[in-house]
Each structure stands twice: as structure tokens, then as C-alpha cells.
Amino acid sequence: MKRRGRQFFMPEGYCVKCKAKKEIVDGVEETMKNGRKAIKGKCPTCGTVMFKILGGKAAAAPAAPATPAAAPQTAKPPSTT
Image 1 (spheres, helix red, strand yellow):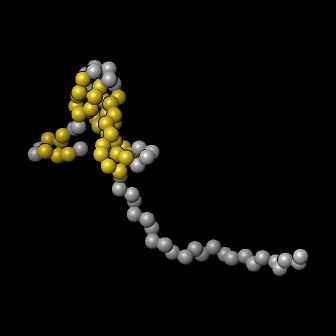
Image 2 (image 1 turned 45 degrees about the vertical axis):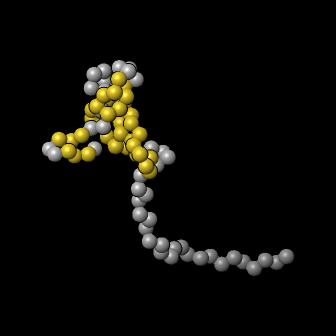
Image 3 (image 1 turned 60 degrees about the vertical axis):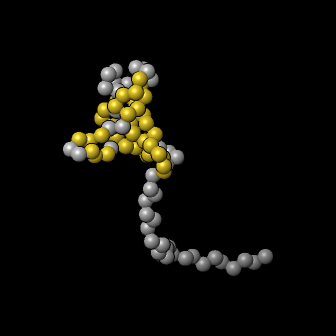
């Protein structure tokens, strides 16, 4: 969602049931399995679920700093072959 002045701007999507471009109502930003962002909401006229894929990939969460593992090391018995 972008903010224009004092109003929130909801993106437009295509409703396949109404066969027209409409503003998405109750839109929620989601991240798809492939990492891309999308907005999912409802059509204001018929209530059908609308889905709009946004450009670009979602920013990856910063990785935790690498720290040495504190796992106990077990000694292997000597091989007798």
C-alpha cells in the first residue's frame, strides 16, 4: 500500500468474474513461495478474491551471524581392519 496525501492507495487488479479492472478492497501484502510479493484482496462489487503480483523479489531476512556450534564432539573408536 502506498500513501498519497491522507488517503491510502489500494492497487488495481483485474476481477475475472466482473471482467473489469477494479480497486482491490481489504488488500493484504503476501510473499509467494518463489519469494515475490503480491497483494491479495476482494473485488468491491462481487466479493471475488483478487490477486495482484507486485514487481521484484521480497527482501531476504538478514542472516544470523555465524557462530561456532557448541555441539559435543564424540570420538570414534579406532578401526581394527
